[in-house]
Amino acid sequence: IPTSQNQLFFTTKNTYKINKTLIKSLNCSPDSFIQIALQFAFIDIFNYSPNTYESGGLVKKFYDARVENIRAGNHLLVEEFEKIFRKKSEEDNNSDKSILLRSIINRQSSIMKRAIPGHGLDNHLTYLKRFNLKNQLPLPIILKETPKYDQFELTTSQVSKLPNNFDHELAIMCYGPTVPENGISCSYIVTDCYFRLCVGQFDQTGSGNVRGEKFSVKVLEYLKKMLEILG
Image (cartoon, rainbow, N blue to C red; front, side, top):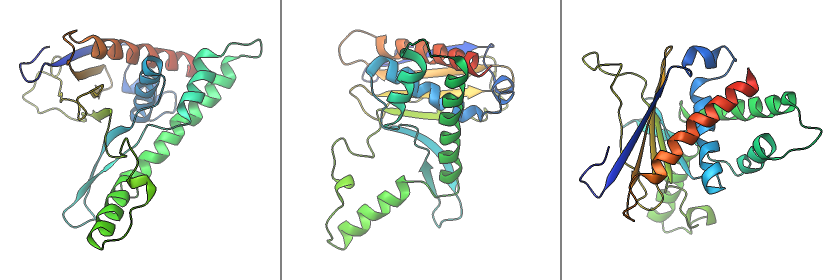
């Protein structure tokens, strides 16, 4: 779906072969399962784990409630990806891959559980940065590094519920990337019946939606591979 605003393109995918019931039957959090598939798809294409944003919901126990980020990007993921999908040896077996993959998904679930009630990383870093600037104190190195910790190459969000007047067989919520160059946005719906994905990208080269289309195909590919390993 091309738009007229700065050549923003969207790609949508829909499958009934992947759904919440199937993922839960493997004793996995559906959201954590999908977030790791997004990481694997990105690593497959770009060979690194991106700075990633996923909305953690409104933390209502704070005044002027705020949204925390459930981070999925992780420097460990590239090596773990290699072990599961690329390294081949006589000692390879699906049991070892299953154990490693399940530990990755569980780690992401743990990050999610900490972030939702407000114990995540990003709000604390933002407060630290603003406090130090306000009080003219030196910034820690992590807050001065480039690329910055709050610039997200991959922005993601699960659409948990669509309005009742929407056609649920067709509807999708989508948004653009927050980083113009190489940025990818990814919204998704996972129900007991289907999985739906919408990937957005800016086209600054005139090549169309090549990156977004490739990424969306890879997401479905790794969701299926992960189901096979854990199944």
